[in-house]
Amino acid sequence: MVTAAPVAPLSAYETIYDPSKVLKHPEFRVLPPNDPLLGDKTANIACAYNPAHEVHLVHKPKAVAGEGEVVVHVRATGICGSDVHFWKHGHIGPTMIVTDECGAGHESAGEVVEVGPGVSSLKVGDRVAIEAGVPCGQADCDPCRTGRYNACPRVVFFSTPPYHGTLTRFHAHPANWLHKLPDNMSYEEGSLCEPLAVALAGLERADVRLGDPVVICGAGPIGLVTLLASHAAGCSPIVITDLVPSRLEFAKSLVPTVRTVLIQRGQSDLEVAKLIKDAAGTELRVALECTGFESSIRAGIFSVKFGGKVFVIGVGPSEQKYPFGYLSANEIDLQFQYRYHNQYPKAIRLVSGGLINLKPLGAIKVQILDA
Ligand SMILES: NC(=O)c1ccc[n+]([C@@H]2O[C@H](COP(=O)([O-])OP(=O)(O)OC[C@H]3O[C@@H](n4cnc5c(N)ncnc54)[C@H](O)[C@@H]3O)[C@@H](O)[C@H]2O)c1
Ligand SMILES: OC[C@H](O)C(O)[C@@H](O)CO
Ligand SMILES: [Zn+2]
Ligand SMILES: [Zn+2]
Image 1 (cartoon, rainbow, N blue to C red):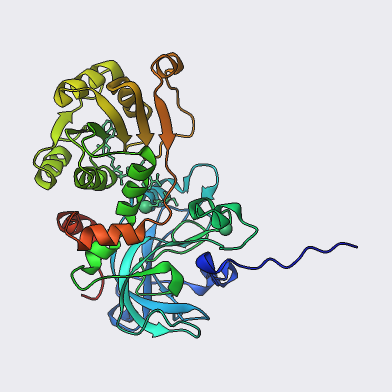
Image 2 (tube, rainbow, N blue to C red):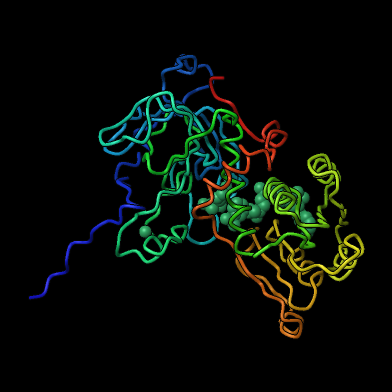
C-alpha cells in the first residue's frame, strides 16, 4: 500500500488559521438598538448582514489569540462595495452566497491587544493593517507555493461568507497576515491599504509604466485609489470617467491634473470612447476599468490604441459580451484581477513615503471605532 507523504507547510506562507473556528450564527446575539452591551467598550460587537437583507449589530464571543495569532482591537474599517452587495443582493457570483448571519468588513486596521503563543513578530500596542485574506500556505497548494496566494482555494477571506468580517471591535488574526503601520500612518490610512492593494495589483499586472497615457473607467473608491496609484506611477495624461459629476469633482480634488469625462446614460460605447480619446488628446495604451459594467468595459476597449490593454478591476455581471473582431484586429489584451497578493508592504511604503495620500478618501469612506 502506498500512503501519501504528510504535506509540510511552506514557512513563508504558513498559516495556522483553523477555518473550523469560524463562529456560526447561534453563537451570535443580535442586539436591539438600546441594548446596554452597546455601551460596554469591552464587548465584542460586530456589524453583520443576513439573507433577509438586514444589517445589524451583533454580540460575538470574546476574541482569543490562538497559536500564531494576535487579537486586534479594530480601530478603523472601510466599507467596501462588496459588503453592501452581500447585504443587498445576498451573493456575489454563483459561489459566494449569504446563507446565514455574516460579519461585514475587510478593510481594517487596529491595535494589537493580545499576543498568542508562538508570536514573536508583534507585541501589544503595535498598530497593524489587517490583510483579510488568509491563504492555506500548504505545499500541496499551487497558488500558495507559487506566491499567487489570492487564488488559494482554501483561503479564509474575512467578510466573504461563511467567514465573518473585521468590522468588529476585536478580531483574532494570524500574526503573519498583519502588517505593521509606521508611526506616520493613521488607522484610516491602514484600513485603506486594502483597496489600494487591489489597485496596485492591477497596475502591476497591467504593466503600467512611467509616462503611460491611461484612462480609468469609474470614479468610485476603487477608481480613486487606482487614480492615486496611476498618478504616483507617473502615468500621464490620466483620464477618468463616471456618470456622477460629484465623483469626478472629488477625483479632481485628489489629482488636479486628471482629465474628467462625464458620461450620460444612453451614450453608445463608441461615443464614450470618443470622449475619452478627445480628453486624452493622445493615444491611450491602457484602460483601467473600475466598474465591471459591460458598457464601460466596451468603451474602454474602443478607447485604447492598437496593441493596448483593457485591464478590468471591476466585477460585474457573470455573463458579458465583448467585440471579439475589434479586440482581435487591434491586438487588444483583455485582462482581469482577482483580489491581490504581496501588495500590502508596497501599499504601506507608498503611503508612508508620501507618494500616495489616502487621507481625503479616509474622511469619506472609513468608520472609526472607539476613537
Ligand atoms: N478585482 C477585485 O479584486 C476587486 C476588489 C474590490 C472591488 N472590486 C470591484 O471594483 C468595482 C468598483 O468598486 P467601487 O467600490 O469603486 O464601486 P462603486 O460602485 O462605488 O463605484 C463605481 C463607480 O462607477 C461609476 N459607473 C457606473 N457605470 C459607469 C459607466 N458605464 N461608466 C463610467 N462610470 C460608471 C459609478 O457611478 C461609480 O462612481 C466594483 O465592481 C467592485 O466589485 C474588484
Ligand atoms: O477587496 C476585496 C473584494 O472586495 C473581495 O474580493 C470581494 O469582492 C469578494 O470577497
Ligand atoms: Zn473589498
Ligand atoms: Zn493555498
